[in-house]
Structure formats: structure tokens, C-alpha cells
Amino acid sequence: MAFSELLDRVGALGRFQVLQMVALVVPIMWLTTQNLVENFSAAVPSHRCWVPLLDNGTAQASTPGTLGPEALLTVSIPPGPNHGPHQCRRFRHPQWQLLDPNITATNWSEAATEPCVDGWVYDLSTFTSTIVAEWDLVCDSQALRPIAQSIYLAGILVGAAVCGQASDRLGRRLVLTWSYLQMAVWGTAVAFAPTFPVYCLFRFLVAFAVAGIMMNTATLLMEWTSAQARGSAMTLNAMGFSFGQVLMAAVAYGVRDWVLLQLVISAPFFLCFVYSWWLAESARWLLITGRLQWGLRELQRVAAINGKRAAGDALTIEVLPSATQEDLSVSQAPASLGTLLRTPGLGLRTCVSALCWFGFGFTFYGLALDLQALGSNVFLLQVFIGVVDILVKIGILLLLNRVGRRPMQAVSLMLTGLCILANMLVPHEMGTLRSALAVLGLGGLGAAFTCITIYTGELFPTVLRMTAVGLGQMAARGGAILGPMVRLLAVQSPSLPLLLYGAASVLSGLATFLLPETQGLPLPDTIQDVQSQAVKKATHSTRRHSVLKSTWF
Image (tube, rainbow, N blue to C red; front, side):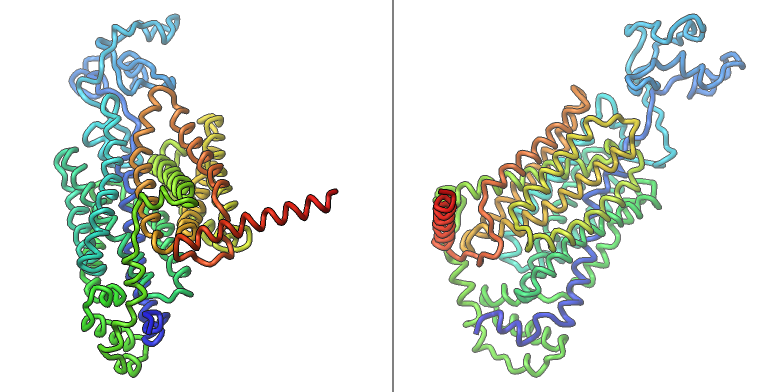
């Protein structure tokens, strides 16, 4: 008896699966807020140097009473690149001559200025507190903000490597429960970080837990769901990330203090930790690892919840080993990165697939973690991105079976790149148009993510599929780490980061045309299946070309 038959007996789509879906997807929504929180907790408020004439009550009292704040600002702060007050320099001494209407505002020398040696004054009208204002991550220290984001994304990379091995050894549910507790504890600790380095350390540990939750949530959903309903289950899981973007905007709009915001998005995971003990361990994993008695108990429990107690009671320990023979034979097949790269027909697929994953991670995290650069109202922009992401994911699932995998992945990546490149040409004064292009571009990335996830699984045989998917995930996270760092190039040219993000998406989209179409083809189980499909396709193309040639002549 195969495991799928066992699952059908106890209920492959019943009350248990519905409850499990809710219990697992709700934390995914809150997990998404951890990924995106620095759009708000690390927002960069308008700022200028602290100057005595404006910010020291004693010095201000000695100035002529007829001078208002604007006049005092003129003599204290030089104009910046955007014609407003300079954010990183101040005059060493008040430049009273600048108040003379016959003297231009540029009548001063660079030597008359100095850095903000006494700190900064921040505009706290939008956010009452951010980590940027708390630790002065501006001017010469502005690079620390994207570095903190890259450290967080590096935590996801390390967590994925460790939690994947741990869940195979210790179980999916145990690692998931431990990850919930880690998320709650370290997420709360972030709010009380006394220094910026400690903040980065705690965020790294949060990201480590994020990886454990994402991986084990998806695994439990797949391993407790029938093959027919697996696509719907994974779609709902992906929707959790989309709804999480809208949730992030709503929570950040109501909580403008970064410490309180961090506490609000971390506290729910204490509840997740408590109820996760109710979740069932993967019976498939239990049987494969020889824990037959435990696996039998979980199957009987699921049968009872699904209203099939009699079927569960009829199961015995003797019938369970036969349900895992197929899984064992597949898991024992040789699988390595070298096999992917050296095998004819798989090397090109591996390289192009990894490039597409890299392009997605590089572009998405470069843009999604810096919404301030894409529009003025970050709350509304975050909501639009989430709503568009939901609609795109629904639409892409409908189109994939009609248009095909290859054209949809190529078009979604290229559309993203073109929207980003177009934003380079739009003036900052046209904020609405810039925001619309940004939302459309990030919507294209949502479509690309759905395509890549499905397409990668269909391109590779069962014996190498998880190796290929793992390589793609590593490439995506590598790109995610580099994405925020690229924003540092804006010091050289404000358009340079957008150029790189756009070029990466366009090139990834063009490279997709090197891959074969997999629509309507059965999933390959062995390397020979992949090579047979390639031969059949080549033969079909040759015959079609011959027919067209004979018809033409």
C-alpha cells in the first residue's frame, strides 16, 4: 500500500487539513511583517544638523527677536543637493551675510562648513521613533541600514541550511515549534536592543527562525495533502505572504514607534508556539525514519478528526512499512550538484534556473526593503503591493495552464525589469507615476516567484528535484543579500541601483527562453526521463520543420 493510499484512507482533504492550513498560514502572515518591518522601523526621516541658534534655548534667546526659524536656518545650514537644508553639514559660524537680499544663497565656501558634530535633528511627524533616528544611521553611517538588512537576509540563508537538516533528523513539527519560540523570544529582544550591533545580532537570529518556519510550514502542508490538492495548498501558503504585506502596512500605520511595532509583530508567535504542540507530525517522515508506532498514532488521530475513526482503527503496524518503499527508493537515489551540472540536458537548465532565482531575490529584496525610494506614502504603497500581489498570484495560476510556463516566467521577469528601468526616467516630482510603476514591477516579481516555484519542480527529475530546488533557493537568498547592498551605489549615481535591478530582471527573463516548455508533460522521475523528453521534442521539431518545408516548396 502506497502512502497516498494511506492518506486517502484517513482523509487527504478534510477537517484536519483545513484546521492545519489555518494554523500554519496565519503565522506566515505575521512572519511576512518581520521581513518587511524595516520599511517602517528603519525609515529615514528628514533630518538636519543640530545647530545652537535653532536647537539651544540659550543661544536662541540671544538672537534678534525679528528673525524667524527660516532665517536662522538659512544662516546655520547650507543648502543641500535638493535645494533644501543640507542633511549632513552645517556652517561653523552663522553666515549673517546670507540674509542680505543682494547676496545669493551660494555665496559661501565649503571651508565654512563642518559635519554634524553635535548630532542631528529629525522630523518625527510621520514616525515617532525609528532605528535610524535612535542610532543616527545617516550621512557617513547611512551604509549601516542596508548592511543590517543584508545581515537579516544572511540569517535566512544560514537558517535554511541548518533547519533543513534539523527537520530531516528531528522532525518537521518539532523544528517548527522551536522556530516559533525563537521568533517570539528574539523578535521581542530586538525591541530592547541597547546598541545597533546587538540589534543586528538579534535580527539575524529572528531571520534564522524565519527560515525554519517557512520551510517546515510548506513541508507539513505538502506531506499531509493529496497530490490533487497540493497545488491549492501551496497557493494558499503563498497567499499568506501577500496578505502579510497588507497586514504590515495596517499595523505600521497604527503603531509609529519602532519599539512598539517590533513588540506587536513578535508577540503573536508566543501564541503560535503554544498551539503548535497540537499540530501533527508528518506521518510520511515518521514512517520513512522508522518511527512506525508514532506514525500510526498520528494517522489514527487525523482519521478521527476527519470523521474516519473506523478507517483509522483498521490500520495496523504491519501495513505501514510497505507504504514507504517507494519514498525510500527515491530518497536513496544519488543526488548532487555535480550530477546536475555534468549531466547532458540538465546543466543548462540548472544554470538558467539558478539565474532566474538569483534575479528574483536580488530585485525583490532590493526594492521591497526600500519603499521610501519608490514613493512618498509608504503605507499606501505597501497596501497596493500586497493587493496587486494577491491578484497576480491568482491570475498567474489561471494563465500557466493556458499560456505555458516558459512565456509566463519570461514575461513576468522582463515586465518587472522594464518597469524598474522606466522609473529611472520619471522625475521624483511625479510621485504617483513612480509608485504605480513600482507596484506593477513588484507585482511582476510576485508572478515570477509563482512561475519559478512551479517551473523549477517540473524541469528536474524526482531524484534530483530537491537538490535543484535547494540550489535555486540558495541563489535567491544570495541575490537577496546583495540586493540591499547595491543601494549604496546611489552615492555615485541615484539611478545606478535601479539600472542594476532592472538589468538583472530583463536578463533573467531573456535567459528563460533557453529552457524547454513543460506544460502538459508528466513529471520526470529519472534523468533518463528528462533526456527522453528532450529527444522527443527534438524529433517533433524536426518533423514539423520537414512538413513546413515540403508545404512551402
